[in-house]
Length: 237
Length: 237
DNA sequence: AATCTTTTTGTCTTTATGTCACTAAGTGCT
DNA sequence: AGCACTTAGTGACATAAAGACAAAAAGATT
Image (cartoon, rainbow over all chains, first blue to last red; front, top):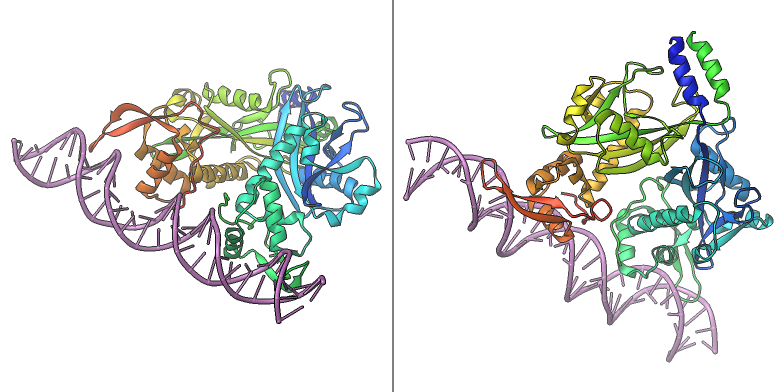
């Protein structure tokens, strides 16, 4: 490398690089509803508004972007979600009034039981339903990020069982079906749903049952290879 | 200046913000094959290796990440591709030996006719087939980016007609089917393919015909709303 | 035991796709 | 003109997946 080459690269770096943050849309299922974790912004800009849990990449603490996402989520919930997926990246000169800004948006799923206590203990973070979220003004372009994450989750609900990650380790098929229905926004045909899931062979029958009222439902858990291989067939009604 | 000195100075400067680049996998269809545009790196690191067209975000020139992608592509091809889609973002401390680095990867499609001349005029850029690409060592993690973009395009070929963007404005159904076959890597049933496309109502019959040898084929073009609404049904054989 | 509730299965209908042969519309050759 | 050859496009039946809905199973309650 000669001096000219060095200067070229050095100056490229020296000119302002954009700020890079990572924001996560953490979904859970509670009280028959889909909810997302929101935090009240403590700092300028958009101080006081609700926004997504996230923050800047820390080059010392984080080895990867996923590390950043998980670190920021753990800070608010104390736990590491079992499912994390990148949604997309927005970068432009107007989303943050301070400067050119980039955010890498992730979606994460977790069972409500697993982080309930932690979230309630800090009162700057709380679970909001998607309806509640869409009726208030959020920080930055976080509304759009949430919409995109929800849209992606909807798609997943149509041809995979990744929505199972918003449930605890063991769950019943009626529970899972209701989760899918809430995510998709319409009711599903019981038989079709079960057929697909059976054919996909992604669940393990734990042998246990759980009943509330009527016939007890079989408890299932996800096979260990879930997350990547959770694909089932298409599903429209 | 030697490499060690460079790295030290560079990293000192780059202490708290990661570098952000945008790389694009530009696909086209030529000589019955799917090809990607590769450029020979002129600078350290990985100088001399083939890599994806791309570069750092320029806060003055670019208003958005797409601007960066298009600017860098236009520099090599002289044209703006009709289809651009974000694939995903990689960011970690080891993909670039200089420093923590992020790249936002895009996929783009263009008809070979529309940028042939420009690409040939500069000999640091050329079209390579996916086979050729996988048999040489590429810069950074560009092989993985290409694989991911190809994988995504495969999916699109199964349930949409976005692959039509690698063809010129007017094309025949047999041509389109062959593009899909090349992308997916296996042959498709003529009847099924046509049925799906017909039902999707995404093409316009131009009235014109084009023949080579046998019966002339009808020339179609994409409806203006293509890109977003190019979805057809699932397609396996 | 009768009834209610919720889970789970049986089965017929509808829809989408696979398969493959057949027709259609050109070219070039004799 | 007639024929063989080539590629485009369609018809028709077989198979497979999904929708609809009723019936059965397994528990709780009275």
